[in-house]
Image 1 (cartoon, rainbow, N blue to C red):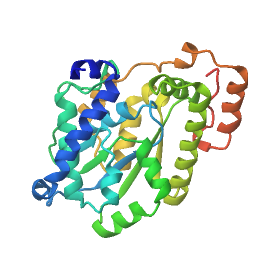
Image 2: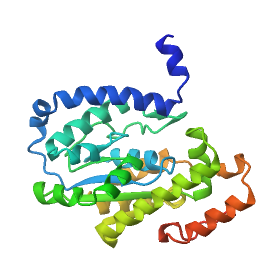
Image 3: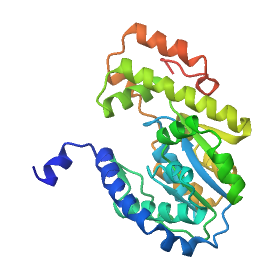
Length: 287
């Protein structure tokens, strides 16, 4: 079977993840040599995303990466390297390789481009913030090893900021179920398992240690929430950058819940389980 046929069997996101895994392995083999150029970087923070697939991390991460002083990787799984003891310079080297590949490829994912023409995506003016938008694996690793970030901060003196993007759970579960080619019932169980991980991480890090960003509000007020995001991670808001954020995003969220038949008992289950999590407060089937 040819490579072309194998690729056609995967969606765009799966193909990118497969290609990136091989490229990342190569980067890790030469990371010590390449990290030297970033040892003098004066980093204000390392920004990691936690949470669910298909919740809006790609959009928020791409907006942050468009800032002239930030580089945010796409699905790098930076926590893997933090757990391995990578220094900020080594982690920066891995992020640079990831961001440049994603940008050269047009930053396309599942039929949508996260590229912002004329922005600083894939390059920097004065590198101050590094990050990774991979939310699910980061949440999984942190829930298992909550002290990993504490150790990183103590050793290297670079604070870690956690960003949690939420989306209406009915839309989030529907889209995730479609992409993982699974049913709504099992995807609902997986969804709330991640909710529990995020809640435990937020409790460990403290209330001010995690910024919860609602996907729907981010689309409705992109300038305001992008400025809030920049302040949270230690970046100065840039007027041109805020304008670019407005141009990237859809004006309204996609209500994918209406594309699949939801049984009444499952709608009720989501509503019932969502009550346990403050970051899901206000989400309903009808909003």
